[in-house]
Every structure is written in C-alpha cells, then in structure tokens.
Image 1 (cartoon, rainbow, N blue to C red):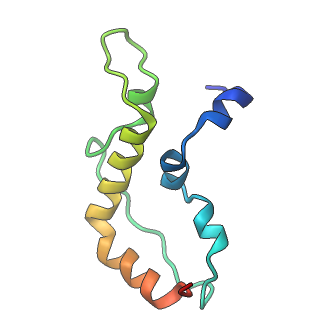
Image 2: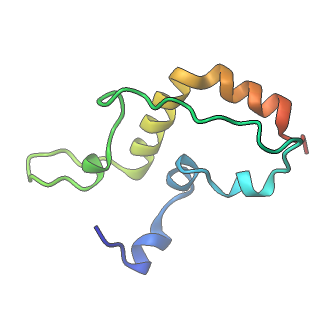
Image 3: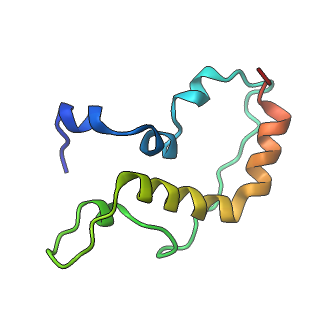
Length: 94
C-alpha cells in the first residue's frame, strides 16, 4: 500500500497517537532503558488495517479513530498496569 502526501497529512491525532504520537517525543523520561517489549494482544481482538482499507466491497469500512481506539483498548486491556506503572515511575511530570 502506498500513501500519498495528502493521505499522510490527513491522519488525525488519534491515529498518530496509536503509534506513539508526538507527545512521547515532548516528554522527558527520568531513566532510559527501563522498558521491555510487551506481548501483543491475540489476533482478532482488535480492528486491523484491513478494516480501514477493505479488499472486498462487502467489508465494512471503519474510521481511523475507530481503528486507533480498538488497538489502544486491546493493548491497554492486557498491559494497563504496566503502562501506568512505567508512566508514574519514568515520565517527568509537567
């Protein structure tokens, strides 16, 4: 799949945040190298790219926000405690 520059600019903030949005880059971390890879949610528990760009006409198209929230909720359902702990321990407050 190739995206035009127009498509790339049209991505909303929720879509961008689903993949580590710009707020992460603006936040200072107290300690480096403290995070570990998280196990992904099982296949089928969240929307996929296919839901955004269906192959068959009968497939339902979802919004980028629906996709982002679905992926976020699937990951947080498994790892909320870990992510919140990391944030509290390693992200400098404003």
